Length: 407
Image (cartoon, rainbow, N blue to C red):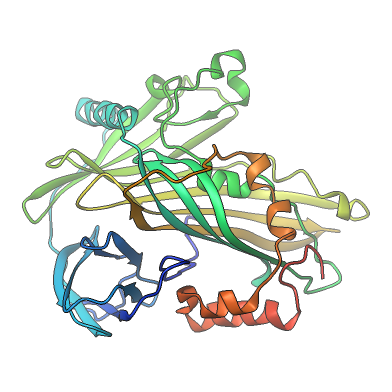
């Protein structure tokens, strides 16, 4: 089973503020010296944070202050606290601090189900927060990037996911790379990325159960999922469990998710949630622009990953990936759409003009009509990228593909 997430990394600051110091660096495993990706770097003083990329690199822009305290955390490592000064460059070694207690595989496990009930209750009662996020989406056909979206959002969100959104700035690009290139209008992908929730009441599901997506923390499906205690471990003074979930044999719904979640049983806090669905969720409806070709999608897999703060019930980031094989006139083109939404700033007051996410708000037409302002994006602090990411963005610029639907 292919389960992986393309690391689409960005480093962020408020789009309308002036910053005077940059904290950058690299995170490494203290024993192997391998880079640590997906670590969360956070300044509690300014409610600003970012995520390390796949090379362990990070950059965080902060207001001027003599010193600032950062907490660096990762699910597999002991947290690190550091004090930094203006324009500091850090190289930080992080140590794993996990003591495994049990690794088990059982069919029926009362403890796993009880913990799942606890998680369900916390998701139902999740408090709403406000903040800013950065979203990036890339579409690949046979390793070539053909579609690109970036956007800044104001959001309201909770432990359960993104509740309401409003786009501040966005840019969109699309290009062909060969005569057989086929494009899909991923009108539902942004919606799935920012609008998906871990928990839902599923009030409408009873009307048409077969059309609903079976999920472990959807109230209608909860009793029809099997929860298995896979692993128990300690990290510092806290205890953690890893619990897998899959639909029971009684659940005959057409679309069902499976995966696992990690839960801090000491702090009563969800740490990580990963789910996959072997279904195209409508993306296999071929674009009208390609009716002259014999097209088919096979082996579709949607995957979601939610990562949460070690210190409070807040989301660090959401990853969504759609992998599939595209058949064009019997030629197989491995393809994928990858996106990442980073929650980089909390806000003390509610944002204005927030609306519930939906297809009308997240349709690619919002992005395809956007006027591309190169200076804004060049000067924006999201520019710290890997060499591969810079190469991808340069390819769109060379094709003059920004702010257009086709080029």
